[in-house]
Image 1: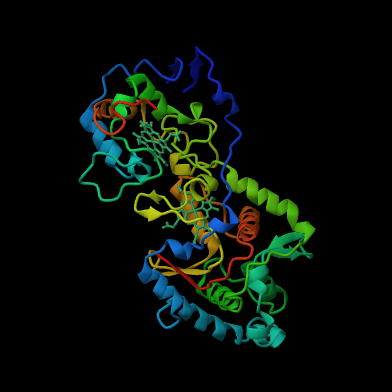
Image 2: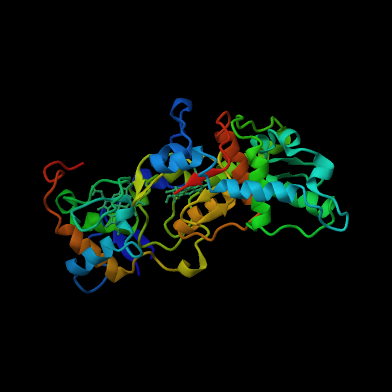
Amino acid sequence: MRALWILPGCAMLLAVTSAHAEIAAHERKSGAEFMSPQTQAMQADDASNPGMLAVLDGEAAWNEKAGAANKACADCHGAAEQSMKGVSARYPAFNAATSQPIDVAGQVNQCRTGRQQAQPLRAESRELLALTTYIGLQSRGMSVAPPDDERLTPFRERGKALFNQRLGQLNFSCAHCHEDNWGRKLGSAPIPQAHANAYPIYRLEWQDVGSLQRRLRNCMSGVRAAPYSYGSIEFIELELFLAERARGMAVETPGVRP
Amino acid sequence: MPFEVVGDAIPASLTAEKGDPARGRAIVVDRQKGLCLLCHSGPFPEQRFQGDIAPSLEGAGSRWSEGQLRLRLVDATRLNPDTSMPSYYKIDGLNRVAPAFRGKPILDAAQIEDVMAYLATLRDGPGAQEKP
């Protein structure tokens, strides 16, 4: 499948560069604004938001002793309402022990193995999602505020490059959909701007709560790409870039999505 | 399968056969095969969900010659490096393709010819007079 060139094309030689329109601050919209009024109402009311069930499970898990250390999260951190306030708004953060950034799910598992001396919780397991949703709720209404930590910069830059890189058999980048075409329709689905301020979410299509990484894996499969693995450095780098893009937006966890 | 690009077109068929417009229409509306309606709309009254990322397919056959349509299907990035129109007949230069799709183009040569033959029949529509 190689083309024989007879007449040279002009723009075609520049095929590796790309120019996507970054979203201006005044145009920035949460994913919730692209939903139907019914789904918005479901997210807004805790009595009808199905993500609140994960919050309740998370509260129970927070207080449950686990592992060889027989300690609960609460034994070290006390009341989550105080100690976890703002955590999800600023994560991923730099982890000095591994010299890598870590997201909230990674931090929960680091406490599990390091402090509780328990098995790590499986990615997307009910208990891990419950804890991250409960922790996320403690930042609800706060502004997304990634730390000004220079050690994160190279990782965030790589996240930006991943966001702009074409991938999969259909050969689009995240930016093709979320910067060039947000607000338009992909088949029946409105394309949001890809802000990660409501995760974990309850997705009606999944009939379950799920993490940001599950959402990103769906987007990658959609373009027929091999998704990155849960917890991979690529996903953490994308999360860092998405957090920077959403700086100043209100945390909405637990979001509801169609 | 090699092909020859002349200007902004691939004048020669990718196969020895002529494409079949009816088969082409079926591929265009198929959400697993052509995927066209994820992004395009067109004269498909029976199809409920049509995307609006891309220009309507209505009148595509008046706007473009067969060879121009063929290149737009085979590899639209040669015309616009930033395009979101997938390259339907390209397997090299792709990144992280899922194992089930690796080494295969989105459509094979015969399917490209069928879709092209169908698009060539779309002669009415808003763009019939003006060439972009």
